[in-house]
Length: 531
Image (cartoon, rainbow, N blue to C red; front, side, top):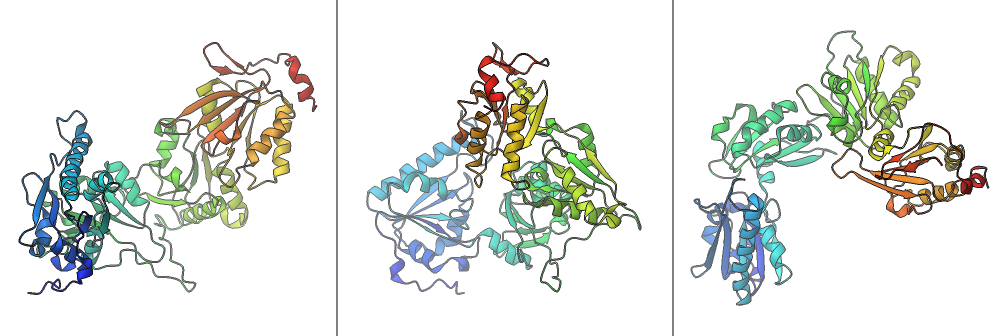
């Protein structure tokens, strides 16, 4: 039987002292490329990774191409699960293993031999060759020959369109926690889940929670003679080998006359029913900043709508449809929520912090005003959350303990001169001022301009706090002064608070603003009066 590998141009022959990472495809030898076959046939050394007690799958695929005098290097993993006695844990054991692999291959390369490292599928797609490549590519000439991936083979076996039009495809490892895997599955149009075997039961549960189990197709040993294709819902978890994947094809939604994909239809729970829109503040940072009321609402709505990073914070569950979008389409989100509510579904529109503070609450009301007669029947419930400003104040101490103002430095919805006038007026009035959206890549100079304006009406000794990623693991707080603050150190991950003239730093480093009005420092009186 012909494999289609009989003739290969000599220009593809391996060169002495070169390292090659060669993809041999997912299993069928007929899927090995001509270039890969020529390199395998002409190599001095062929290396391949394998489990400790099983033959190498990559070697099995390409074995008929080995020359009689080729040197073989079997690179057997020391561990194939996360359990090991190595002091560095699983990844420490693998790091030592890859160092050893690199040393063994380097000895051949230094002796002038060509070395081909076989990789099942593609060398740089979840392939072990990557780690050897990282260690040797600066020392020796290297080349990577791509191979047909398991994703391509599984998609072909599923025999359906994987992605259409602007669909987003996400490739996920089945080793992710169930909740995280379910969330990512729900946030994409099409998906491939790899690394199954013992993880399959959890993968199936994540598919169920994401509402995708009925669409999911299980493919075992794609492209091989013993390939199996089944609905994922019908697979016995005990029978699943590691070399299997789950494919979730994108929906085949017919286009309308304008060529646009039709959105998923609402559920229409009861004829004539009008759903409620809940505009929910998630709080800053992690789940511990989300209120019980917000969690309860998110646990019962049919849809969650919002800026993608905020939607990502909502746990996936059965029956929940996630509708993430970009950062500048707030009113569009409001319209989408209103239409879903009119169709009978309860909807949560989410914001970070408090939805009523530079969040989605005002945008939903703005959308409702575009057609008051149509949308007046839709109840809108605003669920408050902890604001970023007040979380930053608490982190510092009691920075906003007296009168204060919250101002967004984004000029997307208001003229820059209006923004600067409001900012300087608040500072001149001796309020502590929390600045949202201080500086972005497209507004890199404006924060510096704002500081110049503020320094004209306030003394340089004013206390300033810069809080970055409040409530997240990378949380950071920096206390400085108005005169010393460098605008280049501030980005969109920051919230900046300019203290009042009375704001002070305690002996323990806590920052607080007294509730009472004290006399302004002598050095600031002229600035506060406008100079």
